[in-house]
Image (cartoon, rainbow, N blue to C red):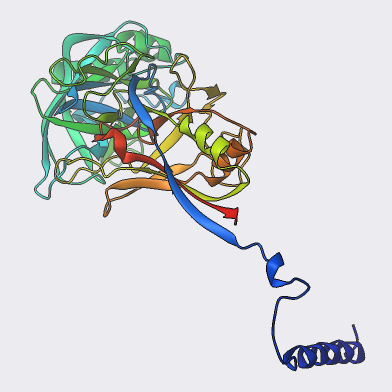
Length: 435
């Protein structure tokens, strides 16, 4: 556009503004006062009811965390064991020379979760026992999966965990260490001739504490778990010097999972024993990570709203949970909740590797990639987020599903849990109508 054309357009704009401002009275343009139809803005809360459901098959492989330890909570006693196999690269294996000397062997690991922490550190009497039987890497492991744990103690230590960024070590049994190191240096020994041979000798380890710790710990998986053999041998260049070397068995590329035993018998949730059964709450609703306990929410009163408040515009809908009941000092509930759809069987509705649920506003209703997260606010002790798009579609009878599960984001990697009163689950609708 050239400068002359711009000047003409600006001139027309200023001329229009001049005539508009020169009017003696301002009034509705093109409408009489009787034609105005103002909006009335209204707010209502939709009542919900809740039940408690035990969700079966909580996957405990591939989470990056192996839970171990025990925990006594108002909603049950929990005890976890961490299981892992070990791997070495047989094709790049460097065997020690005949003159090599074993200096020490350590089982090194890192932690990424402590249920209750404090500034002085947390004590953990951790032991690693050998397991038996084939440990398949093609199996989907759950918290209910089991492996036979022998009484063969491979490594142990009394640890004081002061942070989650450091490596901690267990002392490995000397007899076992010497046996493995001798086989490593002997090419005729079949132990290291194949990974299958080695896993036949050591199917895996189970990490557990034989003492009641009343705390739950998360061990990082994969290569962060390693059995390191530190040894020395004369330098190959004939200099007479000594080289310090290391051979590592790691959890990299190895199957792993944690198993969990939960005893709710002495709690008000003792009746929650069978999966996929909806149990009425005695006092509170419950969400318990790891143990697979979730709350099922009935939102069917959205139908009454949709049928009674006709010709309305749904502007905003908030789903809120809380305030959460009292928690132990220093312990927070899960950072967020998902709203997963459920069915008459009280199970989560799977879509390949994800669960169907309420999606974030403006996302496709039947998608699984964009689940809405009810984020926890520690100041108000509540979870809240918008579910406006879903309720708009519900109101317009595009998609109606009345039952959801409050599913914690840390279900597979934590022992956190919380209780909430049934009346503290609320759906608040902001809507408008033509007066």
